[in-house]
Amino acid sequence: MAAEKLNKARRSFATHFIDRPVTAWVIALLVMIAGVISIKSLPVSQFPSIAPPMISVTATYPGASAQVIEDTVTQVIENKMKGLDGLLYMSSTSESTGQAEIQLYFRNGTDADIAQMQIQNKLQTAMSSIPDAVQKQGIQVAKKARNFLMVVTLVSPDKSLNAFDLGDYAATHVIDQISRSKRGRNLAVQCRIRHAYLVEPASIGEIRIDVHRRRQRDSSQ
Image (cartoon, rainbow, N blue to C red; front, side, top):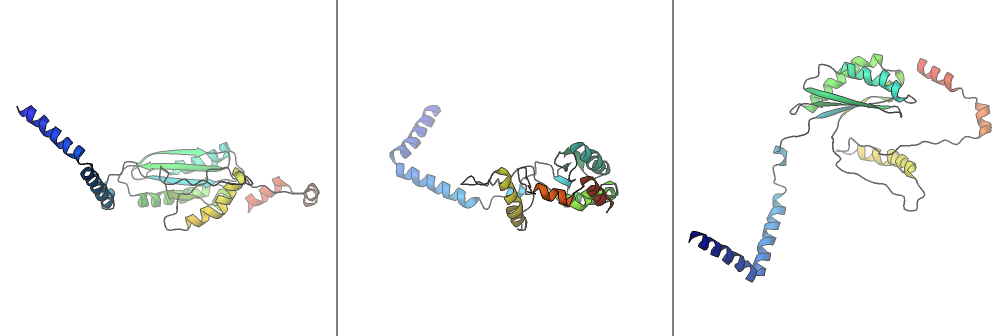
């Protein structure tokens, strides 16, 4: 008897809204509006942080191969990053473009600002062993998110600019403007930037550029 009464109540409840579609639409709209209004009051900040804090160390060695920057920059910095509070592990990449990046991951609950300050202090002890060309370019230490918040694509409608030209334009005009904003950080151009210089063959003979001597002079300075 109890099961029959329960089934009869369910049928009457469903039949009520089937026979009155306007009432069903009004209730659905009210629930939707209440959900939209309550989005701003959700305690998102109280949710636990799942991804461990990560600090990125980026260095640039112009003209160096991947092996050279691995031996002279990446390993030197990694050897100094010992004794950091809450450090779980680190990973690094050394590219043939002369760029090295070391990512340091910390335990959940570690203050990223304090971790960044400790990394900067450790980095200062390694500066004497890092080539002068890298020091001139500067070594960046920044908190970095593992996920992308937004991806912006630049397109040339008339096909007059290729991927390299669009990368140069983004690095020159877009990245600098966004990085000056209050929350603009951890910006990157996902394109190989190419700088081309056109020089007449006759002028090369007049200038007589000796690349080897130029590099020696720069390193001595």
